[in-house]
Image 1 (tube, rainbow, N blue to C red):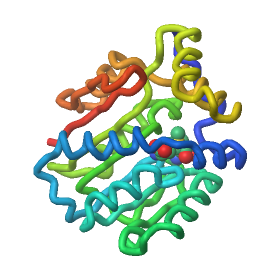
Image 2 (cartoon, protein in one colour):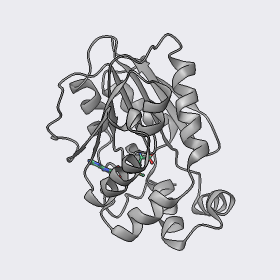
Image 3 (spheres, rainbow, N blue to C red):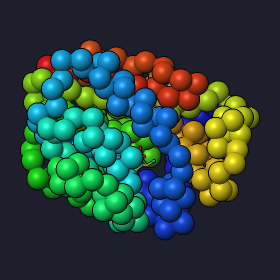
Image 4 (cartoon, protein in one colour):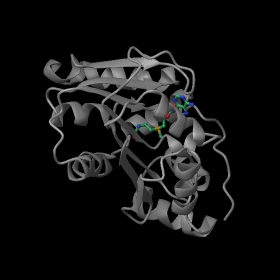
Length: 224
Ligand SMILES: C[S@@+](CC[C@H](N)C(=O)[O-])C[C@H]1O[C@@H](n2cnc3c(N)ncnc32)[C@H](O)[C@@H]1O
């Protein structure tokens, strides 16, 4: 199945942002943090972390909870999504939230508080990008030798029918706006082979691409 771009890169619609922020992604968030620990078992968390496309801080906050010494910058282009990020931070323990700064800005081009990060994480941003190199180039621009990178995203199913089956399995009871969003996301996602090609083109051929579920891939590596 050919890739179909998302209707828009940014999730600026409030109804869409509200539905996304209210959805239960706890399993995939937990999996992300677990996977990071598996990939980087020596990581002690005492440094600067960048979360690209942080949305309602779904992985920013659990990362801060898991690594109590980390300082995190989350960036997203959508004020509607960041509104739910700020709400989540308000409701969470200040010992976590005092270490998180949110920045509204478009990738590429956003002015970040730091030029280089020790860790770069991102979940479910890649498929939103018209040009996937935007993600890999942003990572290269804001990293240094030794920066640990973990990206998790959907991968594109083989047919629209398969996409619909995935939605029924995992979001059957969710509001229609979320199901439509999920469907668009699956159709806009890349195949593992396409992501491998992107990494070679970006000069990151040593990064690994692993299929971690029936709909997710993980890309991990250390900048050399
Ligand atoms: C599906 S959400 C993922 C949010 C969060 N990372 C998570 O896993 O729940 C994708 C987010 O990326 C943001 N986004 C998409 N394209 C972007 C761009 N070019 N620059 C900045 N943010 C972008 C969207 O606004 C949205 O909040």
